[in-house]
Length: 207
Image 1 (cartoon, one colour):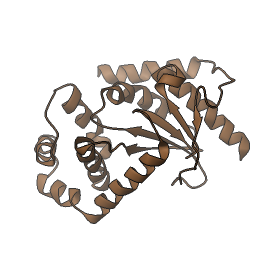
Image 2 (cartoon, helix red, strand yellow):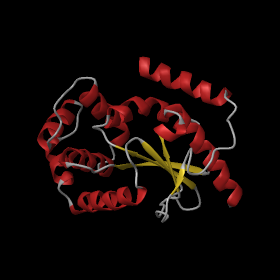
Image 3 (tube, one colour):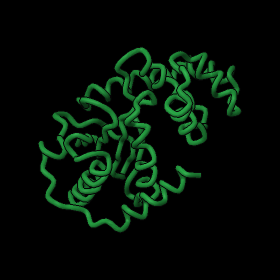
Image 4 (cartoon, helix red, strand yellow):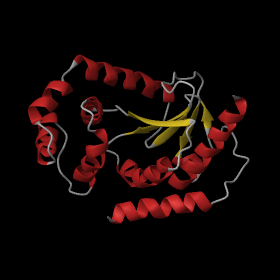
């Protein structure tokens, strides 16, 4: 309930704020040397590069959710999990598993809360399957999808995209496969949203 209230407050704040203009490439955001392919055909795609294991991503999630609630029709939001170590690989595989099972929206925040609020050890797929069973996900079905070819392929594709993003940390936002926005250069997490909105307008003007 508290988190939902926070999302609403942030959404109102964003709707009332006049966005600053004049963000500079190489200062507030960075153009990727090679563009990354997008999946949102005909739309401006914004991708969060994140991990369930990242505390900053957990803090950013309600801010991002508030922003996502107000997205115009020509903007598509999605996520790519970072894969920097064995634990992050487990979390990435979990992300694509629950997405393939059609339960991502149901369990996304539950996974975040389990790791960062409840401080549960979720570093192996058995622990994750046991936790998800508590919120109504069949552990046998989870295990089958977790080890499937489709999920493995998604993880490999995410790994390739991650290399192309050249991000120094997470959360990072990628706009239309062309621009990277990080908290340090954008002036914090709220600043990331401001810069992304600026880049969305920039892309809209180019089309």
